[in-house]
Length: 294
Image (cartoon, rainbow, N blue to C red):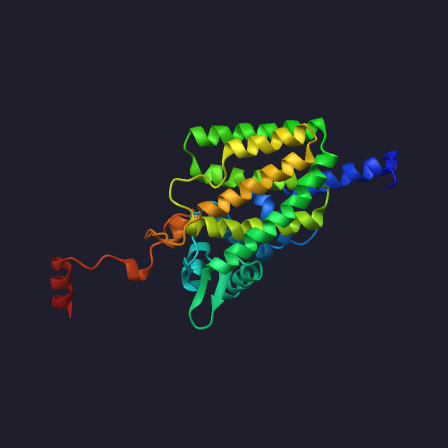
């Protein structure tokens, strides 16, 4: 077998540029999914007012899913979304169609939209695809990692540790997804990173439905072990740790889960908006006064 060719300055620069571009799309929770579906090279300040509100609605729903507030099967009634975001039905429908395209929402004819509810078979296929994809990404990450990258990963671990010890489940859930995207970003392949982002959004749905209450979406110690293998440039060890980590996550899920009864506004993290149907019935004196006037 021919020896690997040494990296030339141009190849090193190209690899660094690719890693930087990929890392930018995994910079934080907001950009993780949304940057992958927004028009290329166009941030919110450059979008039209209508596009900005559509992005805001999309962003709010995705964040609710990733934070495990919007569990699979949650209804997303168009009239309520219109009222919560103060927009027309055409805007809401475009957002729901976009979410459906990304596998986050299911559109049911004559019944409206709900957060997608993966079947056990879909769950198995999604985890199988994710293991295969992360295996390739981890191998590339080990080949490309720098000392600065390792410092970034260790800061990520510190943030996870802090969220875990203050029992901040929503933050811990977001950080758990961020860890996998940050490792993947080191591979320097934006196409593979995009595919992983979509799979992670689907996995968040599954965890929100099936994982037993009180469990963290990922175990901090398992993330730490993966980072240590990457730091030692141990590709085989990092791959084995990542595969075991994902297999354990899949084993932990349950096929039954009770859902709480909460308003859509609270699930989206928005203030409640009173609707005419929710108005309190008139008191007995008020009813008497109304009858007297008629």
